[in-house]
Image (tube, rainbow, N blue to C red; front, top):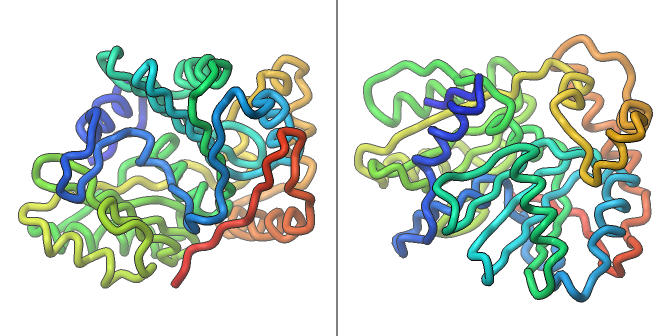
Length: 301
């Protein structure tokens, strides 16, 4: 069961889910794949770090309050990093290397990722994600465990999904094999399943039945769930930190982040504000000074 109440809990749980390589049987244990992947393969950009002005890319993402994911892959240092960005600020970050004994998280992971960005020939993969998907995925970093009931994996899965749907809390459910290999991620927002990602098949139908099949097909599957520990957008913003470091140092991040936010009291307001910001940002230009063009992504149903 996820226990995201402290850093140690995050490390211990994710360490069980990840290792250096794919086992070749449809289960992937790389840490960066625990954050949402592109929902449409053709709409994300991949470039080498020496070919883009990475600092301008980061400044552009922060200034435009983009919601996205940045992945950095280094073959030289055998490392991979994933930065989950909500409205231009870092909501979660993971960094793993064959030369590190354990995964790094949060600001420490972000510092390592920034170091890798500055090195030539590293691969930078950047793609926009919906706010709903990022908030659901953010439960891995800033969530509390979902108490589940039932004896069989199928019953535990039903209990976890039912709890997240009825509570209206953004969250995610991870389905693992009996060897703690991640098989499937289920993202839930506003009482609905908004994405089901299979580590062997990619994005599949966003239905309860599609997700349940991965539980049924894996003997002794393990089901873990986490709900985002935030009642409104302001609380989500308090969990973030500056992508570039400029916002926090100038003490202007609050004005930047809350420009499009009105006071919120509960989860219903969190959902409303997420939708309103998405509608406003839909008409914002996505081209930035790095020369890369970002495209909106959506899960196919």
